Image (cartoon, rainbow, N blue to C red):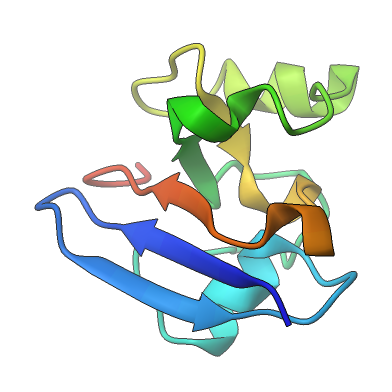
Length: 106
């Protein structure tokens, strides 16, 4: 099963194991990653699962669709690495994915 490494705003890393097909957001919530609030439950409607994809991984993910892009414009401190973790499906190709977490979601 793929591993995801979450890096919090202070630099602390937490490695979790995720199931193929589940979202990065779901893996975070199931493993107690508090910086991912996931208030809308993964429907791409709130932005509280905002994260930054490590630069080494950004090209390995599909581009965000228009709905995700619109939501990213509403999050705190978006940048070119911003993604909504509810929109990233875990696959074997993402084993070792590094996800940086913002200091706060609102």
